[in-house]
Image (cartoon, rainbow, N blue to C red):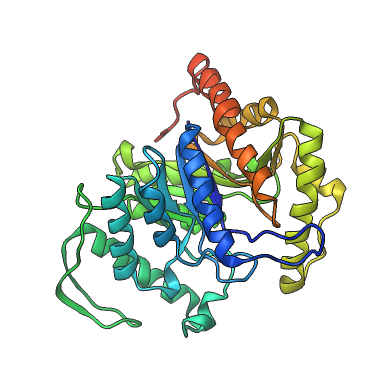
Amino acid sequence: MELGIYSFGDVQRDPATRKLGSTAEATRNLLEAIKLADEVGLDYFGIGEHHTYEMPASAAPVILAAAASVTKTIRLGSAVSVISTDDPVRIFQQFATVSALSNGRAEITAGRGSSTESFPLFGYSLNDYDELYAEKLDLLLAVNAAERVTWSGKFRPALDDALVVPRPDSGSLPIWLGTGGNPQSSVRAALLGLPISYAIIGGQAARFAPLAELYRRAAQQVQLPGASVKVSVASPGFVGDDAKAAKDMWYGHWYEIMATVGKIRGFVPPSRAHFEHEANGGGALFVGGPEEIAERIVALHRSLGHMRQFFQMDVGQVPQKDFLHAIELLGTRVKPLVDAELAANPSKPEVGND
């Protein structure tokens, strides 16, 4: 079972003045976090593309290329790359470069993104939301499949036997399809031969079990090789030395980001009671002490059969020192507990299980 982190590169907030800090500092903080995650034995670090002051991690491949030079084993990926408003050829070239620098540790998670600020920023219309995603994904997979590409579409100039380099040592990159839980996306991933990554950010996490089953059954029907049938889970979470203290601290930061997003999307921030419901038991917020979080990861694995779970811990300007300590606990305390439990009591094999 792989464990890891994902981040949107949240800026710090001055505790005295409440003013937001530097976006440059936030970028350097990300590199520090990735380096520590590698040192404590975590398996994966993903950077999600955003274009806001609060979350300025807009150039994941650049940060990951820097991380490749200061890490040894951790896999480095996007979480997600908003392919609808980017050029798939450039996305591939950038991540192929990260792959070369990291000796094959780079991955792409292709998605629509959880927000839409990149559409006006790069001159795309939200009216083309679905068409852009389908076409850009098609091109990304074509570029990944062959060094020379002939392709045509609606939103980008055609390619005629175009050479796309550099190439990873293996010839292609691992590409995941990221989704927030759309059933059609589960089927799409299987039909395209891609592993799937579910963003579970609210509600009861086990409600995604039918989607994982749908994905596996679709993969079985198209005879997708078992090695390609993979499920991962991205979820908000935080690990502290003490469960209650971790929940008390992290709630304020989670509430702040939910309030900010709520103003944009028109919803009232959730109450503390709602938070407690989702931060305990089978909820989507994995917040607590090491033993509790390990138990909840194992319990979700029994339902979903996922092979990787990675956590967004620095939401709402969590102080860097607390973020780093949570990473340390995930690697040194939670991961050994999860590994030991799954080794002692393996999950029952399922259709297309990872």
